[in-house]
Image 1: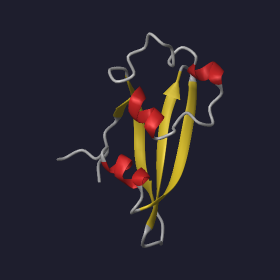
Image 2 (image 1 turned 60 degrees about the horizontal axis):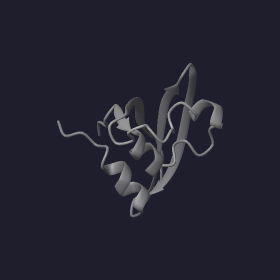
Image 3 (image 1 turned 45 degrees about the horizontal axis):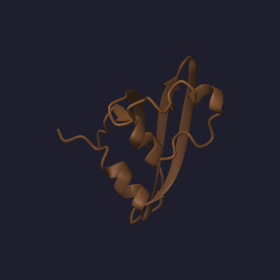
Image 4 (image 1 turned 90 degrees about the vertical axis):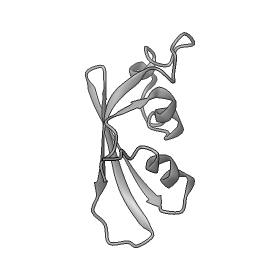
Length: 92
């Protein structure tokens, strides 16, 4: 399934993409004057292979400044997280 390659800061925060990232990488993005809904950044979203029926793995790769980050989620297909990720699918 193809995913979008661009997400807003609001979406990134909903998905907890920045949870394990040091503040020094985020301080220029997460300011009170930033419009979180209209600021988009590039992200690569990939499904990872697995052998489980009701659980899947997905990887988000993105760059902040000159630093690359990856976040891998294990997602139960009936969870809120699965719904949030499903909203990132693009129609062909």
